[in-house]
Amino acid sequence: MNDPAGTYDSKKIAGFAARLLLGAVFTYSGAEKLLSPREEFAAVIAGYGVFSPGESMSLAGLIPWAELFLGLFVLAG
Image 1 (cartoon, rainbow, N blue to C red):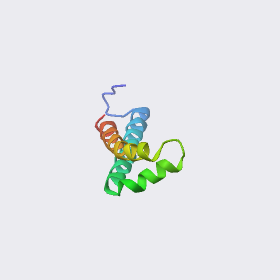
Image 2 (cartoon, rainbow, N blue to C red; image 1 turned 90 degrees about the vertical axis):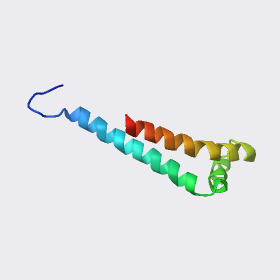
Image 3 (cartoon, one colour; image 1 turned 180 degrees about the vertical axis):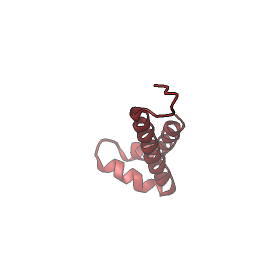
């Protein structure tokens, strides 16, 4: 709603705050994983028992970048 008095819709404010929080979490998570050794995150992925060690290493290289860029895109709107 565009109110000439300058008041803001609480749903818009809550949506904006949620977008900032979610974007910040994804960005921080991706950056944290990129700064740590890939083998550590690969071991976590392999610990689930779903992927082979080789696939875990590939995913450990891909997922942090995806988190970082998705977080930045969410922050950008």
